[in-house]
Amino acid sequence: MELKLKLKISPNASKCEIIKTETEIKIKLTAQPIEGKANKCLIEFLSKTFKLAKSNIEILKGETGREKTLLFKNLDEEKYNKLLDSLTL
Picture 1 (cartoon, helix red, strand yellow):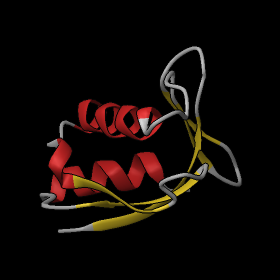
Picture 2 (cartoon, helix red, strand yellow; picture 1 turned 180 degrees about the horizontal axis):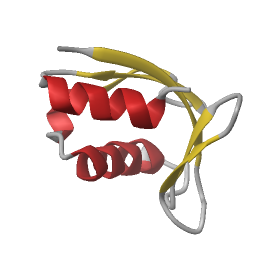
Picture 3 (cartoon, helix red, strand yellow; picture 1 turned 180 degrees about the vertical axis):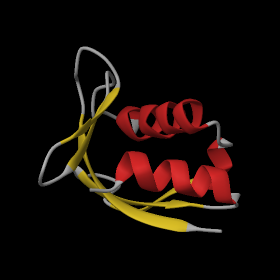
Picture 4 (cartoon, helix red, strand yellow; picture 1 turned 90 degrees about the vertical axis):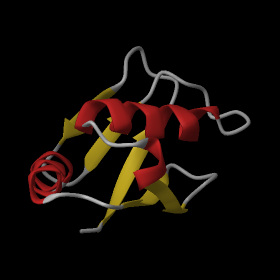
């Protein structure tokens, strides 16, 4: 299974975390948005949080922006549902 999600990224935070509000899903990252460090941190954080291989997470849009479209690949039903619950409104 595959899942495509749009997320808002907030780099340079005090800790990595996922924040759900009524209007958006925001992911705070400790890395600075310099030379792809925030993108690398985002993939590592999501990989550890959802127990996915880094190669199964791809940034489709927004490499240099705060709003990103991510593709999660090779998901089993359990991981698919966990991602949906955690990263959608």
